[in-house]
Image 1 (cartoon, rainbow, N blue to C red):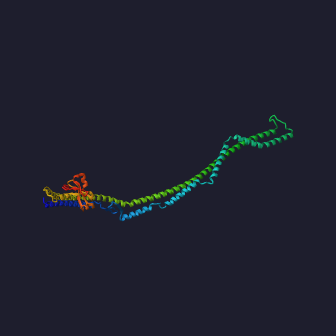
Image 2 (image 1 turned 120 degrees about the vertical axis):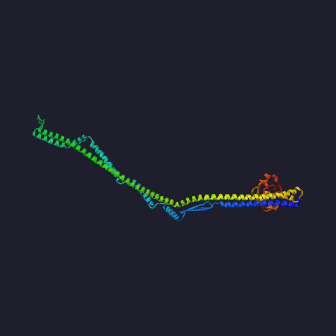
Image 3 (image 1 turned 180 degrees about the vertical axis):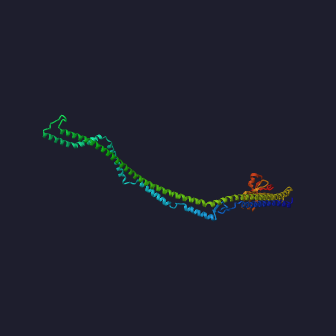
Length: 438
């Protein structure tokens, strides 16, 4: 084959190689553009929902803000102000609590306070009751002993007079010479009989008087016992009334104190209820705004789903066009490469040298990963080889490789196609690209 044929085949292969690089770069650019457009179209868009009472918004980062607006905001501020004002002691509750504690403090001393008249009254009541017991015992005792005692005392008072009259009678009888005179009828003189009769009457009268005196004393003892018992009971009741009055007064103070403290709690509880009611009412506009936001979120979700669906459809359509362009470019590169390879093959079969050895050196290209930076995986071609894009580093520049390039990695092919990998005279791996692009 002529030198022109070698040049022609080499040019065709070089054109196919450059074409393939251009197609890969264009495909990468289109893919990056598509990703940016899809990301922009699928990004969440902030939105705001407004009602007659409030406004709610969701920011780009998902932050939520909600609040009342207009008149509702003024009402909310007023209700919150009232709530803050009502949080704390109610008006008058502090005074009521202080008075309640004062009454409770006064109730304890009142219950334990010493009453000056209590002990004398109780003592008099006990003495009266004890005296009534003694008098009652005396009134209920057997009257015989008392009658005998009274009779003896009366007779003791009458006996001297009777003895004096007896002596006078004896003196008179003696002076008349009649001292020993006795009669059959009376056994003595009439004077003696009259004296004995008077003595018997005096004894009978003494006995009657003793009985009457004893009865009178018993009745008097009963009356006095009743009076003493009534007086003792009255004094006892008076002592009890003193105790009861003191206890009643102490309990009244305690009841008043507890009532005041209960009133304090009731005032504070009522004021707290007002504060809670005001707070609840203050957040009604925000609740309405959040409710409207829920509906807005549902609507936004539908819109976002439609946007994402449209983005997906757009992406699929764009990727289909990119795949078609990539396939077309790869087909063109393969066609040109096949032509060039055919020309070179024809030259090789003719036995002529020319540039075939030079072309063979081009087909075996350095592809060691140690000479590459920014290696990015592009995809797998129709022949099943992993295709990468990279930038040649400083080590590659010393070997004559510059810029960016698309191809395979020698380290990949060592594991899958070791027959395509050989060692370059520089000490780095090189790859036989025959058949890799078709």
